[in-house]
Image 1 (cartoon, rainbow, N blue to C red):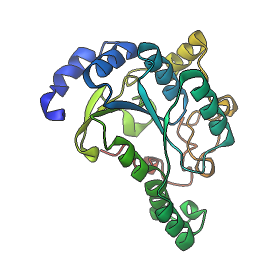
Image 2 (image 1 turned 30 degrees about the vertical axis):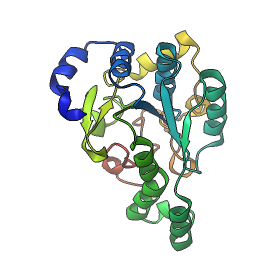
Image 3 (image 1 turned 180 degrees about the horizontal axis):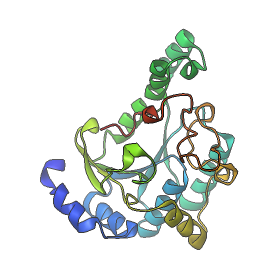
Image 4 (image 1 turned 135 degrees about the horizontal axis):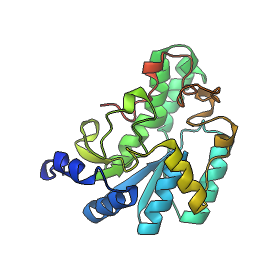
Length: 235
């Protein structure tokens, strides 16, 4: 699919377009072989609201790692009640059992290699399954979220996942833009956001941030800042 699209030209055309306009283009081009990957963070809830307003049948999936916050599970239930069903993907139980039997339940604190193994089993491999029948996927990546994301484009070729198209409608949006949309549209959001959690992942690997800290400082905070990605968005 990526070979038939002029990605560079599309980015020039879409750079000044609103997130809704990017989503409208994406759905017209790829539906039903396109899905939003939702972690139920603020950005993904904004995209969920936009998507289902454009097309109630737009696909959305989530990765249920087994280690999420209770607040995230509460939001998952409320979101499905409001917006309709999501596809839920779980870790492979055999790999999960082997990993925890060999390294313990809290292996991620022992070394970066073991943390990445946990992310691989709980998130990366389930994502590969979620994307296996798609031509494109949608994410909530924004350029100002982290130093590792400043070059994010609205349309990218995802070489990590067989060259499918990766669409980032919020790439040029700020945190203020996200929260303005949430307030103006009465969008559901994770209660942890009100308690110092701008970025939310698995419960053991996420903490609240202090005033003035980087928004992603609470993710894998015991590791070097430049290492703080789980592998879902590697280049």
